[in-house]
Length: 119
Image (cartoon, rainbow, N blue to C red; front, side, top):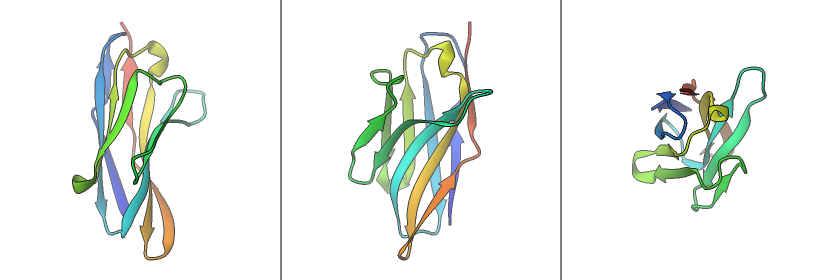
């Protein structure tokens, strides 16, 4: 089982930057994909960015050019560098991982970290 712990959220002014981190721990064979999702009040959870174990990345159109997803495989840690933040980026950000435990694929979610962009 994989446990995910996010950190790095907070309050930032429009145009500012934040860096989110997600540390994975527990017992698993390998992590195949990790990603960041967000959920704003009254809205559905949406994909922000994800990265596969081979390194390919996918970004939501709304964050392309502003956010960068990266990972430290040795430490099983995922990052999201968020620049040029806008008020519409305000949401709870969740870390997600798909991982193998033996032959079976599982999914895990972190508890979320609040990001608020406001002047």
